[in-house]
Image 1: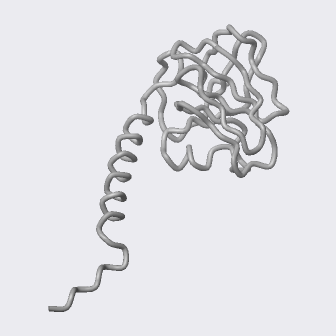
Image 2: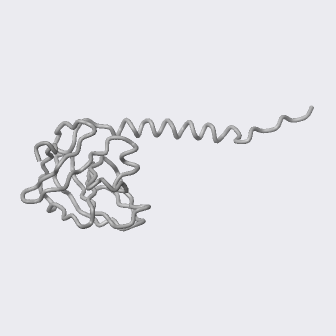
Image 3: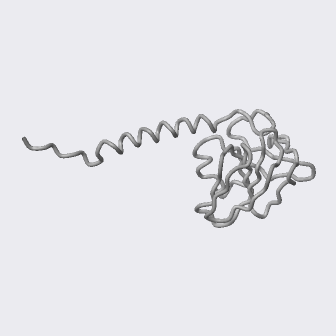
Length: 151
């Protein structure tokens, strides 16, 4: 008998895609949370303002969905981004970013300058991305998260 032709994609890539889909699903459930640093609850679709002493952030979008995280600061209408992540990158960016590492209680752990085409690992569970022209809070400062309606 003559051997049957193999499918165009074979069997292995299908299983690889299934594995990837499972890992992405686990990742999506891990990043969606109902609170921002300091344990304050957050309603999706809203922006927040972060303050620490005299420092005040612009309106910051809280990235709760995979799409928000994927697009991130590349959108023109985003002044800042707060996300729960282990690392961030600046691939596809035109200018550098200020990256502020924040712990679960809202204390600023460290700040980095993220240059174009580079990656930074997080030093805490939360990362605040700001445009380079925006000043950041001092290291060790306690951030307070306010809904934009109270800002």
